[in-house]
Image 1 (cartoon, rainbow, N blue to C red):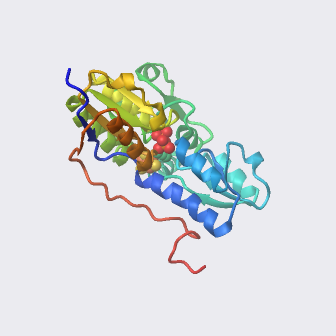
Image 2 (image 1 turned 60 degrees about the horizontal axis):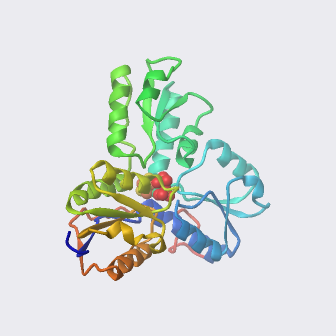
Image 3 (image 1 turned 120 degrees about the vertical axis):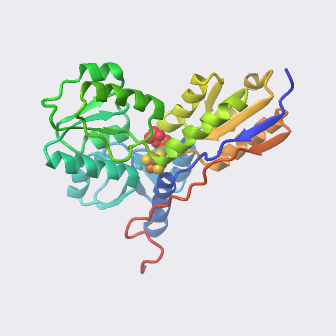
Amino acid sequence: MPPLQEVVLAEPRGFCAGVDRAIEIVERALRKFGAPIYVRHEIVHNTYVVSDLKARGAVFIEDLAEVPPGATLVFSAHGVSRAVQQEAQARGFQIFDATCPLVSKVHVEVAKLAQEGYEFLMIGHKGHPEVEGTMGQLDHGIHLIEDVDDVARVQPAQTAKLAVVTQTTLSVDDAAHILAAVRARFPQVREPKQQDICYATQNRQDAVKLLSPQVDVLIVVGSPTSSNSNRLRELATKLGTPAYMVDSAAELQSGWFEGVARVGLTAGASAPEVLVQQVLERIKALGATAVRRMEGVQETVKFPLPKGLRLDEAA
Ligand code: 0CG
Ligand code: SF4
């Protein structure tokens, strides 16, 4: 096998518009109101981002009981249930909602269709905060579907008005497979006009599909809690390319690159580019001499900041 030669950078990779916005919300809240700023759940699922914001005065909590009266509270990019939203409002916190607008869009759809009498199947991963937030838009009537077996098992109260929604960060292929099983069992099911899996998840997975066959190993920068990052590693593995996910350059193992000529490098939607560059440097130190960027979709999505944190507002 030839020695380590080239690193190919996936395009697009790393931060999406929802993550950019969420981090910016915490940073601006810190600047405007000073520390501490309370954040419900990791603002995005990245160890580096969270520890950096912690060092600057953000306090990450899971339970609102940990938030003192009068505090400023930010909801993470993954969104929250109605119960959490209502409790936070009732306790009078100053709230900034960093829920990604593409997650909020799913919440709005659920609320609207529920009004029309719909019951829901939600395709997603149990225990993920986005799933808890979306399912928590209603008191009842949303059934979690994790796989094809769940489709066979689920027992909706009625099937005349049944709608399907999904987590935004699923494997596009797995979701399509599960959705096919849903359609087969419930042909009348109502589907989102545009799929709920977001553009960033789709684009990063598409890039890995193109890149995987060109490389001998794929490195994904991302944290273990990050759904979309895990899906990138999983996808490459399914395509037959050995793949590893690392939280930082320190986690790289030289053994992964033995007998490897070409390394693919990508990052989940919550992983900062600075970590990608550190990983790249480390792979270069192991012997890679060339770096190439693959051709890919240019993302231009940008979401506005919430009122009260915009630069053009009077202080
Ligand atoms: O991929 P998930 O939903 O786990 O979230 P992460 O924070 O990693 O990235 C995007 C968001 C929100
Ligand atoms: Fe929004 Fe998609 Fe990014 Fe999640 S991964 S924050 S849904 S753009």
